[in-house]
Each structure stands twice: as C-alpha cells, then as structure tokens.
Length: 538
Ligand code: GLN
Image (cartoon, rainbow, N blue to C red; front, side, top):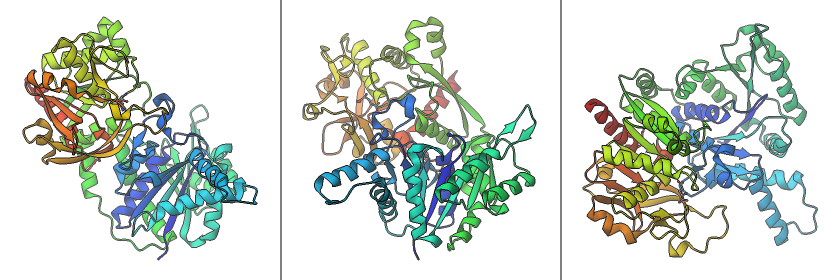
C-alpha cells in the first residue's frame, strides 16, 4: 500500500499548538498500529534554529543525529515513537541553501532557477526523504509552520498542493484554526476560520478536516456554519478546546470525537483497535498527585515559556510517575545576586535545577545556588551549563581557586575549569559547530547515576562547545567529586556527582530531550525522589 500523507496547516493566529496537535493525532494512529513519521517545515530563512536566541524561538530540540531543530520535534518525541532525525525538520533556509548549491554545481545548467518548480521540487523531495527514511512507514505527518496567509509559507503550501495533486488518494489536509469567543458580544465567531479556509482555497488547497481551537466546545450550529463555508463535512469539524489540566489530555479529547477513525477512513488505512489505558493511568496520576515537592529552576530565559520546554515536560513525566505534584519556582539568575529578598526565597526548596544556557549573564546567581545546595545538602541537578556551574562552584569554594571559571565566560582566566579543548579550537563559525547529538557514555557502577539508569552504558544527546578540563579531575576527586560518567572510548567527563551529598549530580548532556510521559527519564525520577526525601525530612 502506498504511503499516506497528512498535512497540517494553521489559520488565524500562531501559537495554536499545531505541533502538539500533530503529535497527538500521530500518537492515536500509532496506538492503532500504524507506523508514522513526522516532518516540520519551517518558513524562516535561518538554516536551523541553532543560532536563534531562546527568547526568539524557544528551545532548540536536538535529535540523535545532531540536528538542531524546532521544539515541535520535542512534542513528536514525547507523544510518538516516530524516528526523528535531520530528515524531520526543514527550513526555507535549508531548502534555498540546497537549491543554490545545486545551481552553483551546474545541476540546472541552461535553466532559470525559480521558486516553482525548483524550490517546490526540493520541498517535495524533503517530504519523500522523510517518508522513506525507515522501512514500514505508513503515514507521514507534515506540519507547516506559521499561519496561512504569511508570505513566507507560500512555497510550502504550493508544494503540498502539487504533492497532493500527484497523489490524490493518499493525502489529506487538516487545518487548525482559532474560533474566538467575544466576551463583550457574548458570541462565538467563525468568520476568521472562514477567511483562513478561503485563503487556503485560493492557493488550491481544500481542507478535509478543520480542527477548531476554542475555549468551550462548539455547538452544532457553529460546526454547521464552518462546514458550509469551508467545504468540509460537518463531522469533520472538530473542536479542540483548551484542556483543563495537561497537554497530555489532547489526544484523549481528539479520540473522543473519533478523529483517528475518521482519518483512517479518509485515507483507507487498515488499523488496529485503540488502547489508551496506560496513557489514562499516567494522566490520572498527573492530575491527582498525592505528594508534592517544590523545585527551584535558576536560569535566564525563564520569561519565555518555551525556552526550557523539554525540562518542564521531563519534570512533569517524573512527577506523574512518582504521583507527585511538582511546584516550580522560577528564578532569573541575574536578579538573585542583586536582590536579597529573592536570595532568601531561593533558599529552602526541595531541590534545584540549573538548566543549559549560554554566555556570562546571570552566572553568579547560578553559582550561589549551587553553593547553597552543596552546603545545605539539598538536591541539585545541573544540566549542561548547570554542570559547568557545579564544577566552577566546587573549584572556587572547595578547591579555593578563586579565579576558576569557564573560558566561555572569561577566556583568559587563571583556572580554566571549563574550556574549549585543543582539538576543538579551530571552530570559527557559530552555526552547527557544537558537540551535537547522541554520544555513548560509560557509567561507574558505584554511583548515583548508575543507580538511576541501572545500566553501564547509556546514550544521551549533546549541544555545547565547552567541556570539563581534566586537569582539575584529580584535585576534585580528592575532595569528594565522583566523575561517574565518561564519554565512551575517551576521557571527557559527562557526569559529575558528589559523594557526601544526598543528590548533587550534573550532566554535560541534555537528558530532558529523551523523557516521555510513559517512559520518564531515570535522572529526572532520581532527582525528584531525592527532593521527596528532602521534603520528608523537613
Ligand atoms: N554554553 C555552554 C557551552 O556551550 C553550555 C551549553 C548548554 O548549556 N547547552 O558549552
């Protein structure tokens, strides 16, 4: 049977949760034994989001093969088992880069290179590459970033129009729109949805299903209206109301409206029965937890709700697993130093997490947090930059090396505890030049890390330039640091922990990228368990 394609577009406004919706629908099909693949097409001109500020773009999600991608891939990972790779995210920048390189090579010799067909052909090629990257893929979800009507997404929409025209029976379009409730008028408004469907029609795309993001479930009259104006069956107008407690309720909500069955019918897909028992159980414990901990997150992009997306999700997964509500207190690290009140507020929580980050702003606030956690024996979890912080703090306050620092923060400092290693020094460009993607790490069997993972060899994803400088390893070991994870066949330090501390552990990699609601990450579980113990002692 030929591979089927589901295109997901967005209308009216951005931030409707297209990624979450795509992931939820894919999860339902996967649960029915249909193997899926996911592709996000991003209309911006950056080659990847790796060089964008987290305030601009939110988190950069990293795949095993080292692609720096859109955070929607994180949703795909958490909801599905689809393969995620360089073939799962393409941007306008990448598409043009490929076409221009081909042009320079002479591949189009004699021709004028144009948006149609050369750019659109390249987009279609990306869709096919994603579909054929593994055997057995039955359905490919293609999510188009941005909102219909944006100038920059036009080539993508034109490409999917052509693609669909070439495979009429194998494609459907899902259009996710916003149906606002106007409080002053006391009315629900379908006009913006009508207009965005109209705009799609002008491009030559008629949606098969319209998903309506709305505050409350839509009455039939509104569904009928949308059906009439937008050329879709009434049954295919589905509401995706704001979920009450958790984003993990979305698939259940869509399943109740039989969206998965409808898609299988439309695409003539053979499917198995659905079984959401495990998912429902997870939701139950997530929504009605019996225990509670308070975790302080000390970072500098906390004002952007998506900048640490995967970390928040990984904490949620561990919380659901341990039947524990995780109250999160966010602290802007640069404010901690200046504001004594805030400093007191930071104290006495059940655990601290210092996430990844770049640049010197806010460094001291994070170091103070690590010092406090170490001295007061409060659980501390450092991730990437959070590990650099743990190493710098230990060097400064235990080894008494007052100039200990990372060369990222102070290139000429006397004690370069964190540094760019010799063989990395040729790096000149900033895009795509970090240690990226999955690396194997060997664990010490007598460590907290091993106790969490319960295995000796692990694979985790990286995104950083600077490394722990092994020159300081022996000194730290003498004072109670255990370097419990070492890069396989190498000497690079991947995990450091304290021996005489309930749980102070940091990792050079990003465990949060590999946590799923049904398979929470072992380190996040161990961290929350330690926080629970701390709480009980209070
Ligand atoms: N800025 C640090 C580095 O590049 C840490 C990066 C991170 O936290 N992801 O090494």
